[in-house]
Image (cartoon, rainbow, N blue to C red; front, side, top):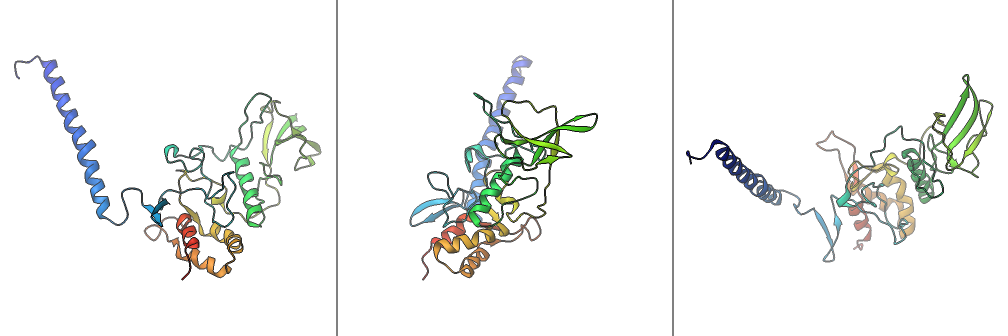
Length: 284
């Protein structure tokens, strides 16, 4: 071995290290962690939830409760939005990567594809959730028709000469009739408004009835929980659809509420799948 050339000896040493590390980190470590996970509370195979002998979901991965057309099933509590693939796709876990300053839509011009801003996504979700739950879906910086309340203002020596409600496509009626004495126009697809100054308009709404987790996706896109506030907003609808007393549904929410992690991190949350399964369980 000592007679081998130096470069070849180094190559063989590197190959041995590669094989040893592959064995340790690729075989021994995963098997040890999986074995330990099976001994501890919970399950290493995804905490699968069984009902009547079949797998109905996971306690750790969220899912949608919608019909074939994508509409919410009214007898079930709804999960928060998901940006993972087409929604709760474990193979495409992730967030939208859109930030709070993403407030202007790209309107679809003929033959082109547009893009919806984060603000308009939030506004549309809030409006839809309000209609579903029978509460106000209004929130700051949103128009009544569910898009971002944003103007593009074109000044001349500091004085506005043109104002466009950039997220409301013509022939929509702008959410503001005028801005600083200038009539507000609706937006026309294909027209370039990039040169205008972006002006989000808060409006008169000071507090939204639809909770934040009903209109925003989680970082993973797979969150199985909703806030207690969102569950309470949905409770009257679920109780009415199932013919149950509201107090019964609220009691089930409390039973399936998990406290703060380690007693101080985060907020109490409700596992949507477990709550819906409890609603389906026959009462004895």
